[in-house]
Amino acid sequence: MKLNINWDALGIATSIVCAIHCALLPLFVSSLPLFGVNILEHIGFEYAMIALAFVLGIYALYHGFRKHHHSWLPVYLFSGGMALLILKVSFHNLELILLIPSVLLIIAAHFLNYRLCRKHNHAHSTDCKH
Image 1 (cartoon, one colour):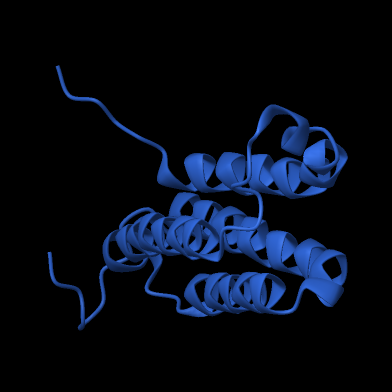
Image 2: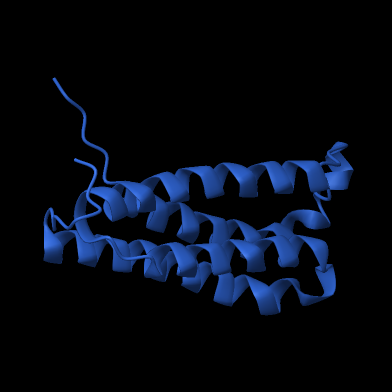
């Protein structure tokens, strides 16, 4: 039995979960030190999560690019969103200002990739590798 994963749906879902995480995390900041938890400001963890999201997202977009639509626009949108996420982690004073456009760009990239894949459905061109 072959398991088919809709990578664009997974990317959209993880982007939404990330936005909720980033919005709710400040609510818990004041109570976690009472329990001895101090991982909230761990920059390495944040960068590792962004790197993991980047690898999964690029894989999903590459699959759509290579097998279906051959459009770079979803990759550009996704990369812009990921760059804004890195800036969000680097500049804490702009965190909320950078979060919304970064999540919107990432969701837009996956949604556009999904739509292009459905529209073209194996558009073969001269640079097609399959």
